[in-house]
Image (tube, rainbow, N blue to C red; front, top):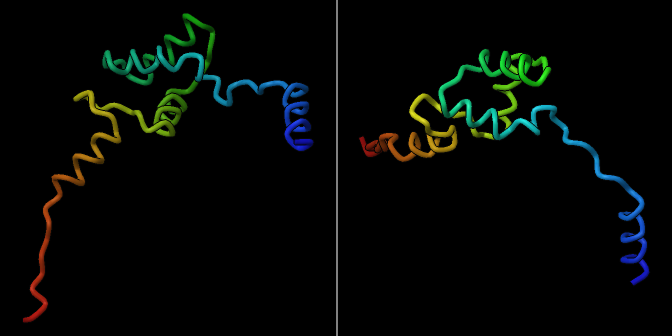
Length: 98
């Protein structure tokens, strides 16, 4: 019981840390623009002109990669592509008796 009280007291005294990525507040915008087939360069330019956020297009790409949600031109996520590739990979069988 005393440990639980100490933990609760500690949590009430501490503050939440801000998001680690400065792109986190723009997550939905970035994903929507990617679904609309915007390039990373165009997204970076829009973030600069509309929101004053100077960011390298590669940073946007890396941000989405970490979250495994980079979409292909077909609209599939990387996770979907990986799963599809595993399912469609030919199964090889070897005759080891020869």
